[in-house]
Image (cartoon, rainbow, N blue to C red; front, side):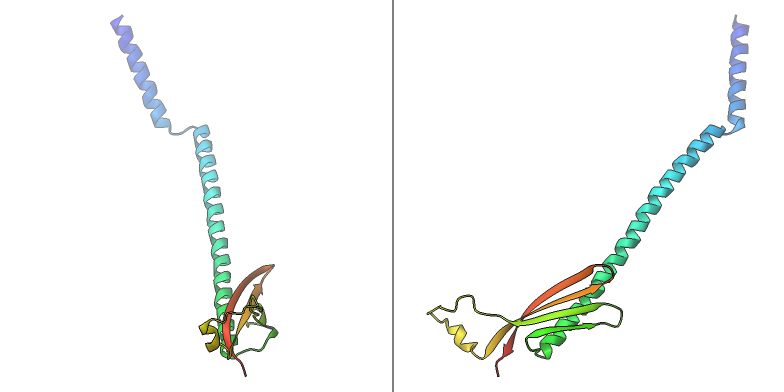
Length: 149
């Protein structure tokens, strides 16, 4: 019986040696490739979204810089009330509305001391919209004081 046990153990160890020497089965290789393919597909999709979001953020940053520049230009040149529009060199378009702001309550009887100092100034609102691409837009507003003539 002990001889049979030894033979059985030799047979089992021989089979183990052969199975180790054979390498991977076709099924194991196919499963590994399927897992690799799914992993690469997910990684590529995430990478694509990152690139797309980066481009979107960059175009919005550029629109913000141009809008701020145009607002500064309009304040520096003391633009009259009205509607203005134009286009930047890179296809971004802008439209601005400049309007005088009215006091909230015309019937106020108490005049604050600071209001006397502002009798020669008129608050104006500039609403500037920059648009680009398909339905992309950015709107900025700024209130500034304009000297009365």
